[in-house]
Amino acid sequence: MSDVTELIHQYLRHNKKFPHVFCPGCGHGIVLGSLIRSVHELALSKDEVVLVAGIGCSGRIAVYVDFNTVHTTHGRALTFATGIKMANPDLKVIALMGDGDAFSIGGNHLIHAARRNIGVTALVLNNSIYGMTGGQSSATTPKGAVSQTAPFGHLEKSFDLVKLASAAGANGVSRGTVFHVNMLDRLIAEAVSRPGFNLVEIMSPCFTQYGRKNKFKSAVDMFKWLKTETSPLESWEQLPPEEKAKRLPIGTFLAGQEPGLEVLYGNLRDDLAAKEQPR
Image (cartoon, rainbow, N blue to C red):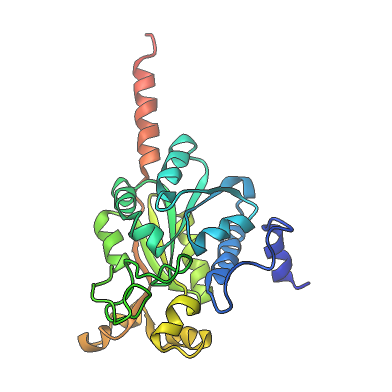
């Protein structure tokens, strides 16, 4: 067994639904490894980490990791994560969601979690489709893409998750892909260690429900797309406008250091308690 394999197995629940449920070519298994490596890099104990997952393919990751885990209802991962963080601010709370879970049914929860700047790390696995429930269009399905509910091409605009989270008030916002694994490890580790609300959008291909309907010949072609059609933010910013429109920037877009809501609440509680002390 290699050193990397041994490292990953330290953080897995043994004999739990292996081999995993993800389809061949799905990027979610890569996210699982990246999450584990990030936690290990930060030297966090398993008891310090809470992984809150919603409904969807991404939610199955919570089954495998040997952290404190909560598998919640559809679109409500951030509400559970908020309660956990406010009850125990010392925990590292990670909400892991799909694009539908986070930005369709859970969209209102996400913008208010960002506005409140609650100290939760939101990992949004964006495969541009409802993968588990049959391949319906989601809030991030590109305009013109084919889906089970848009057989002649999707007519709606898609959300830009980075812009939406930034406008809503998130402390940290980044985007990575499952092709750029070393960058993804770094982005997750930085988000978990940064105060306040941090969102990491992770581009993770779904060949089964999205790729086959949209002229990708194989899952490998979807990974090649992530390689050729994305650019590190620093390089992307140097491109002319017409080239920017053709490529997807990846990297860190916001990296604030404002304290999270749980810290402000704790400070207020302590101040009120001090004022009530008899003199």
